[in-house]
Length: 236
Image (cartoon, rainbow, N blue to C red; front, side, top):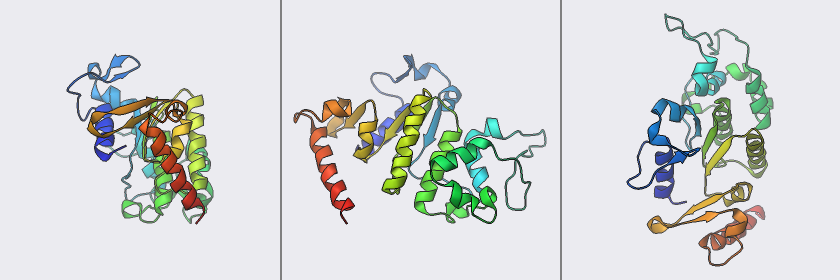
């Protein structure tokens, strides 16, 4: 949960770093035995602070899966454009599907240019919560077997947090693996396993139910404190 622990976890899985001891495996296979392209092609990453480009909503979303949605000619011209004033290309149906599932469809489609509306520099035309949900949509559009979410509910209200939780259940039903790095322990009970990173490289690992049953686990005390804070905020 600490900043350094979180960074280590992300960097090891994406192979920005390699471990000094032990190994990282996916499906029993050491990730050092596969190419970077293969490894990162199998991971769809939703960062805490997503970069958005000063182009259309559609371009910003489809950017996550260039091989599927963009086809470059020898002259390197994009088949799909999507900028205001550009070609009004057919919108992939899964785009609207995911916008609906994250509660964004009515807002986006209500804009003068819909998904062809420019997001502005760093997505400034949209609120923080809207940018966060668009980042999740972008992640979903890359149909990778592993979804890696870094603080995905940061900036989301309780209603939109529940939409994200529902999305997690749908991913699990499709056989996808979701890895969530978060300080929001409300998400923990929806995870099969919890890895609680502590100071000094120590950790606790198990299901949410296992880690909250015994007072010997520091996670139990942390979760109880979280519930108190969560209740206090809800009462405001």
